[in-house]
Structure formats: C-alpha cells, structure tokens
Amino acid sequence: MGSAMFGAVESGIIYAIMALGVYLSFRILDFPDLTVDGSFVTGAAIAAILIVNGTNPFFATLLAIGAGFLAGCVTGLLHTKGKINPLLAGILMMIALYSINLRIMGRSNVPLLNEESIFTKLETLFEATGIDAFFNNVASSIGLSNLTSTWSILISMLLVTALIKILTDLFLRTQIGLALRATGDNKRMIRSFSANTDQFTILGLGLSNALVALAGALIAQYSSFADVGMGIGMIIIGLASVIIGEAIFGTRTIAVTTFAVVGGAIVYRIVVSLALRVDFLETGDMKLITAVIVIAALVLPQLIDGQKERNRKKRKRLQQELKLREMKDGGEEYASTKSNSQSI
Amino acid sequence: MLRLNQIHKVFNEGTLDEKVALEDINLTLDPGDFVTVIGSNGAGKSTLMNMISGVLTPDVGDVFIDEKQITSLPEYKRSKLIGRVFQDPMAGTAPSMTIQENLALAYNRNRRRTLMKGVTKKLKSTFQEALETLHLGLEDRLSAKVGMLSGGERQALSLLMATFTEPKMLLLDEHTAALDPARAALITRLTGEIVDRTHLTTLMVTHNMQQALDLGNRLIMMDSGKIILEVEGEDKQNLTIEALLHEFQRIKGAKMNNDRALLG
Image (tube, rainbow over all chains, first blue to last red; front, side):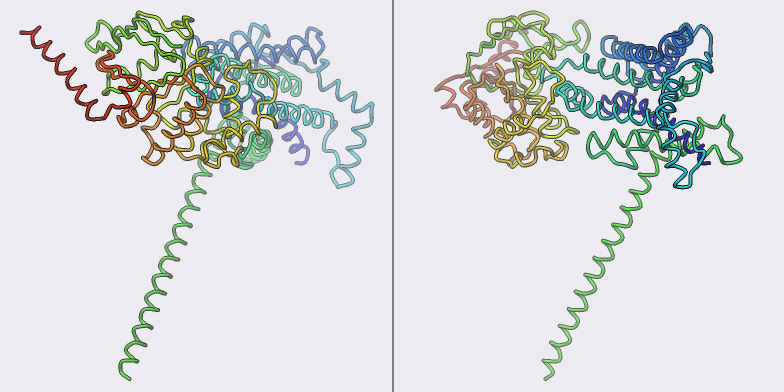
C-alpha cells in the first residue's frame, strides 16, 4: 500500500507538468486542445529514440520539449490562419501526430530498460551523495520503511514541477503573459489594444504542448518505454487534474490555480491507484475510471451548491415565518391589552 | 487627421440580400474635432466605424490617418493609433483579469510587449492617478476582477483604457446605449471631460439626439449609407432636436419626391 501510494504521488508529480500544459490551453486560452494526446507521445517518442541511440537524456528531453512546442504551433496555425474550429484543429493534429510518432520510433514500442535515463543518472547522484540514505532514515523514523528504492525521482520531479509552476505564474504576469490571458478572455478587446491575437494563440498552444511533451518524455523514462498508444485519453487526464484541482483548491489567483492543477494531478493519480485496488476493477478499466472521476468532479460541485442553496432558502423561509409569527403574537398581545384597558 | 476618401461598401453583392452599406463616403476630421454621428438603424454608422478601426475593409476607397494610408492595415496594427469603446460594456475589458491588469494591457497598446512584469509599482500609481479622474473609487480596487464591476463602472474603465495612451483617434460606438439613464449621463459627462482634457480627435455614434447635440463640435447624419447632413460650429450649437428631425424629414421627403418623379 505505502509503496503504491508513493508511486502514485511520483507519477502524479510528473503528470502535473502535462496538466499545467492543459491548463494553459484549456483555461488560459479557452481552447480545448486535443493535440495533447499526440504531443505527449511525440515527447516520449523523441526522448526514447534519442536515448536508445546514445544521446544524453537531458538533451533528448530538451529536444522533446521543442517538438511539442512545434506541434502546438501547428495546431495554432490550423486554427488561426486556416480558420479551423479549435476541436477539429486539435483532432487533426492528434491523428497526424499518431503517424509521425510511429515514424519517429520506427515501431510501435521502444523499451528503455537498460538505457541511461534522466532518472538513472539522478538515482546514481542521490545514492552517491547519501541523500537517499538520509530520507530513508527520516521515513523509517516515522515508521515508514521500504517505501521506495530511490527518493531521487520524487524529489527531483517535485523541484522541476515546482519550478515550472512558478515560471508559469511569473510568465502569466508579464506583458506577454497578460496579453495571452486577454486573448483567451476577450479577443475583441485585446485586438483593440493592438495585440495580434493569432500570434498569442499560436504561442500559447506551443507552450502548452511543450509542457505536455516534456511530461511525455519524463513518463517514458520513468516507466522505461515509449508506446505509440500511451497518449490515448491524455487530454481527459489533464482536464481531470485541472477540474479536480480547481474544485478542491479553488481559483482565487493564478498562483492558487496553478497550485490547484498540480495538486489535482497528484490527487487524480492517488484516486486511480486506490480504485485499481478494488477487487473487481482491472487495469483496462483505467479509462472508464477516469471518465467517472471527471464526471464526478464536474457534477458533484453542482449538486453540493444546489443543496447549499436549498438549505439557505429553507433557513430564510423559517426566519421569515418566525418573524411573521412574532409580529402576529405581538399584535394579539397589543390587541388584548387594548381590550383590557377598554373594559376598565 | 482622419480622411475617408470615396468609401464604398456592399454586403452580399450579387445576392438577394445585397445591401449597400456605405456609398461614396467622404469625410475629413481635423485634429481635435469631436464629431457625433446619428442616423437610423442600418444607416451605415457601425460600418463606418468598422472601416476606420479595420474590422472591415472598403470595396473601393481609402482611409488615411495623418495622411498615412491605412486602408489595408490589419485591425490589431491600427489599434495602435485608434482607441475604441464598444456598445457592450462587457466588450471593452477582460472580465477574469484585475483592474490593474486591464490597465496594463491598455498601457502596452503602443509598446512592444516583452517578458517584463506587466504591473509594476510605478505603473500602479500611474493607474491610480488615472482612475481617480473617474471619481468612482476604482483607484482603491486595483486588484479587483473586472468581472465584478457593474456595467457603468466597466464602461467608465473601458473609456479610460481606450484613451489611456492618447491614441490619434477615439471611436465611440453607441457606448452609452446599454446603460441606465444615470450611468449613461455619467459616461457622457466623463467622455466630455476626457476629450476636453486630451483634445483627442473623436468620432461618436449615438442614437441619443440630445447627446449628439450636447457633445462635440460637429454633427453628421447618415441615411442608407450616405452622409445626408453635416453641421458644425455655431450652427451645431444652436441646433435643437426639433430642427434636426425637421431637417431629416425635409431631406428624406425631397429624396422621395425625386424617386417619385423618376418612377413617374
């Protein structure tokens, strides 16, 4: 149980990078971008094939990010210059990428079992510097032993994801970032303030898919393979993270919302790993579970709000009734004293 | 300042829905001119605005600002020169962003947008000073989301944002039409104040005749895509609604008589 949870948190933190990408397109640009299903695999494919061919894994990951950026830009071009509906532009890019990803990998699956990845490099570093031993001691001192063979993934990914979150927050507050947000919020308005909305849409989709591809590259190295089908439903997982996070942590400011998205991605992984422990559910039910989680995250808040509203109205009615009754009672008393005084 | 040269625009040409929106429009605005535009629905007022702002391009004719031809300059590039306030109070601001972020967007109108911080301390005090001129207390709510503001407040903010960087021209497209009478009066007053202070060359479309008479130094009346009446200076100051309506009927009547004569 402990190690399963640990794994869920680990992968949740990596998937959080993908969720931040989905947040950029879906929430900031108001563009439901299905390119994600393809660009996630593109990131994984490029990293995997380069690593297999002996490229430095850090460099391979960087190239994966660049490829994701390009894929997003193409979707942006299809939408802005080709005037194709956002959903359709994303779907077109998604299926185009399926073939491109197969071409990149040369086959449908590239295993990375004995290859040097970012994580093997970090693992060696953590072992050598004694950081692992330190955290293992801390964990066993609070009664948790044998959680993991290495802390390197959790800690390094926590740092990377936190850095990306902070950079995203800062970026969205720059002059370019403000214009990007306005593009998603009110295109007509920002055009009247001399911003080229086409350019900002393309840039936003590029950045979004760059993050998605980075997550893909990291997941491939984390799970030691890249597969052409690993991106199926990725957009829904991203949306699930965004929606769950927003429902739990709120959206008061940009910084809170990006935190919520990261949190949502981790919560999602934990929920899935808990769900998979239920006896009658199988690994193949993952997508169904995801769909159910997203539906729950969308519908539950409405039900809760509805119930709150009903309770509020009920209270209000009761108060009103009490007030009426008091007035009536007061009136009767007044009337009775009046009649008494008359009789005297 | 602004010069429109023989502008023609036809919508749906060659179909049953063909509509001549603008026909041979010639109009020159001198620097500091404040022109009010009136006319019935479908007279071509909004099309005229869209020609100037670059949302639409003319079939024939040219648009000049400061004698620079901008006929085919895309909308977003033109907006460096032209400030706009729309009829819909929701249209001129970004609702999910704060007041200061909206003002920062306006502030960057004619600057290159970079990776520098959008809202700096220095800008905040500039924004506060600017908001004080509206007398709505918005200067104390810099980090409130614009979506929380009322229609009147949003329109006042839109007006401030449109004029913030003192563009060459200001286009007001029935910008008080969606407000209640009190808010409309407030925005009308603010418009007068801002234009007086900045001497912006302004073109304002309105359905409110009184407003058209109260504001500006020139008035033009449009009908069926043509400018049918131009009044300026003292003549405009002495103009009344009755005289305006009378004039409109006289011109329309004369035209109808002409048509009748032609048909007969």
